[in-house]
Length: 400
Image (cartoon, rainbow, N blue to C red; front, side):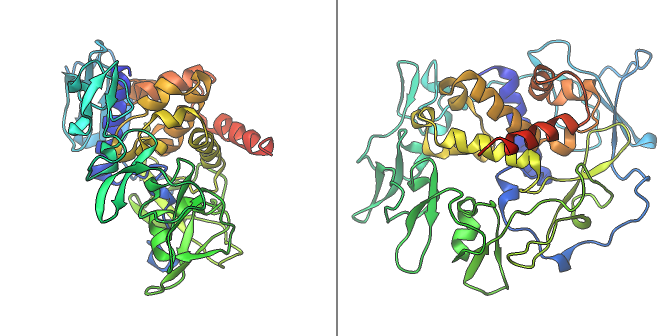
């Protein structure tokens, strides 16, 4: 995988860890109830976030990111050498270009040149250019250790690598025990593997299923009706109540500026998080909700990946992109090129939706070079999200 892809994914993981920026996986979980929203600020014209602008030729900061305290502005300049990258903007500090440090990112089933490329000791060897995991029947402590098409689960009282359970089979204890296009529906009697997206709105499930396998719901969202309830329910489509993108000014909070449409199945409203963008005006925008058109386009690409034959060459964890903040190299190496690029593009676009909206090209080149490259190859340098939203809507229109 190209080094700039590794850098982007590592950067995304750090941002997730430090700021709690939602990724497609994290935003699928139930949202905060309406009563916990912050009070809105009415003046949406006032900047509420730091600004990100290109360095002028007259500005000699000798750094790729220089923070002007009085202006609350980062002045950004891409690193001229592609083997260098600009450090993550965690604090209001100035950064210089730093040499990228190679990090092992390959799991069982992923490509490798040597065992040093295989991440975390999960693989036993690098053989014929592939990280080799443990075989079925071998002892294990994590599904990361097992070869493709297998998972680490308890058999006769012992944890061992075992074949993935088919849809309808019982005995799962996590969704990664099931085949790649299914998750574990926890029940009071026995846990059963169920196809992703197969539970219709209004279907009752245990709270444990809601917390760990909400993708079983066709809406990708479920709701625990009240604290202490043992059951939850799959909701209807949860989408924004206004045309996206939606401006807001209560960063890092659930705000009623980002409210959803009322769900008719549960009589429930929710909200996404108001997040800061990397734009030149200090604007914040509402994160996407699962029913919004770009997210629906991403879910369609995710479903295609999970149902593909290519995924069977990958560790069971890699049914979702960037699980634990790592990479998509197994999809890149095994999936058909155009399908991979579409999958990766919609993943990046929905993950970085707020950050990249209205961001100047220099900012994208500096912090999100892979997205910048894919954005240009998917329709030019138009920063307006209308093209992406229109494309997502077309994908939905012709999906049946």
